[in-house]
Amino acid sequence: MKTITKLWIGIVVLIILSPLGLILPEQFKARSAWGEWGTEEMQKLVGYIPRGLEKLSSIWNAPIPDYAFKGWEEKRLLHLSFAYIVSALVGIGIITFIMIGIGKLLAKKGD
Image 1 (cartoon, rainbow, N blue to C red):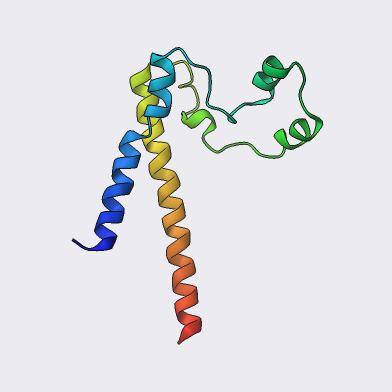
Image 2 (image 1 turned 45 degrees about the horizontal axis):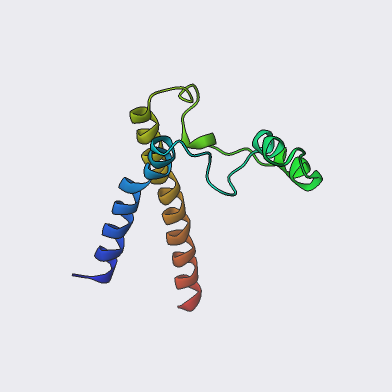
């Protein structure tokens, strides 16, 4: 089996497993993952919002916040798992497209 085929099989397995980050905390009644806190959760955890975090939080808004589609935030776990998988596919698709483009640019320069 070619190395690239093994790579894509590994990526597909990771895509399928991506909802575990949603399912396991739900099953074990855990809070959000370490370091994935927004300003509201940081306020609850430490009692204040660090100035740098507060300033930077308004600069970037995620294209698919919480890995869910708009209006799906309160949907059931099955719907949210599907949204996680779609988010993974979109992210991998964008990265693959960019990497292929960079590869083609660099290949042209090498000729």
